[in-house]
Image (cartoon, rainbow over all chains, first blue to last red; front, side, top):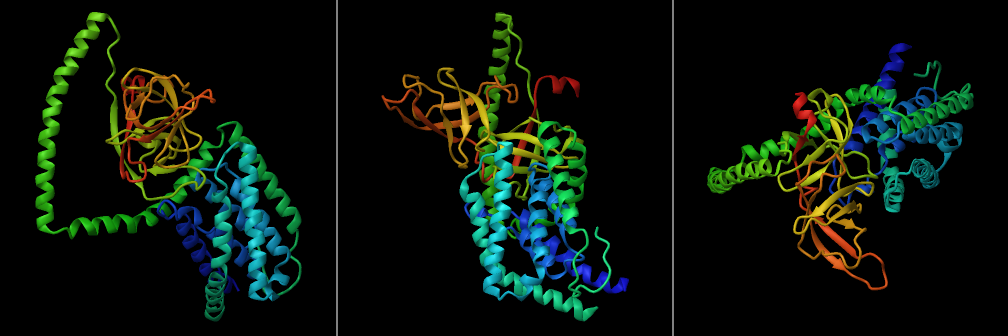
Amino acid sequence: MSRDRDSRRLPVIATLLVGLMLTILPLPEGIEQFRPDWLALLVIFWAMQLPRTWSIGTAWIIGIILDVSYGTLLGQHALALCVIAFITVRFHLLMRVFPLSQLSATVFALLALYQFLLFWINGVAGVTAQAMDYWAPVITGTLVWPFLYMFLSGVRDRARAGA
Amino acid sequence: MVASRGNNSNPARIPALGIRVIVLMLISILLMYFDQRQNHLDAVRKAIGVAVYPLQLVVDAPVRFWEWLGESTTSRNELQLEVGRLKAERLLTNARLQRLTALEAENARLRALLDARAKVRDQVRVAEIMAVDANPYEHNLVIDIGSRDGVYDGQAIVDADGVVGQVIATGLMTAQAVLISDTDHALPVEVNRNGLRTIAVGTGEIDRLDLPFLPNNADIQTGDLLVTSGLGGAFPAGYPVAVVDGVTRMPQEPFADVTAKPAAALDQVREVMLIWSGPAVEEQ
């Protein structure tokens, strides 16, 4: 039983680490603001697929790590990730049966909510930024979602088969 | 984190989900409140920062490897050319330095005559910028030395051409700095030509600073060099900041529209210098 769980955990942790690397990887000025929120997408996927193991607790810890590496207000990303993880877990059965197009629309809404929460907290804390910095990742995030979904489904199936 | 047993395909409800999310949100809000109001959480931040450090190194590694590869495969011919160029440059710099020594001595003598306090020489240390992106909403960078090496919050950072920014958060082995082009950054400067004091504010664009507080009749023109005035306390005086590249005077507006281009290549620097000035030098 425990071996089964470990073998299922390893691929998830690996994807999260890669996601964190992609998040802090330097990109040229101009492209940088279009970087998708990799970790938000990963949290949505794993909370949808394995909601018992990877849900809001994980999302919160990832958020804190993000806050530290970004130097933002401690708890800002944690709160936003926590909220979208909660919504995903709440509706995970529904989302699993959505066709990919409908799922992408849901992901778009979740990413928009995520950015809105960050925007809102920034507003309260007095941090100013250009509107593009918030909304560009929502669009690119939705565009990469179908590919990420297929890739991660492969990872999940392989993890299950290998267990 | 979450103790869970059983099969994931079991469609039963996840227990206590709502309570957990509310508790975590409350913790987040409390953390944000304390982080915003006080600096109690610096220790927490540093601890987690140390945990993220290896990951930053891993991300940084390919970039370093690429640079190393580029350096080690440069042809002999190119290297010889570069050595020649560097030698010429060194000769020029040395010649200038000789003059500088004489000038410094003269300056000290004149200051002594005027009974003015001698200018403290700043102590500097070179730091490398880690190829790590920080906050997307701000112009930040991460450098590879931290509080272990004596870096402190608010410390000035310059490169070979001018002021780059200042440290805003120090970890144990890394430190985060804000660039002068950040929208939240303002820097007290003076025009080198006539000593006119003003404030240079970041615009969010990497190659432009704004000088919003100059009246229409201010004596400023395109090409003026702006240097730090040392009035803010964070930056030592006399480091070049930017060159004025646009002055628009509109009669109906109270202030002139003045922009400047940073002297330092903010998006290209790889190595920067941290400055310990004044009292900090005496302590060490």
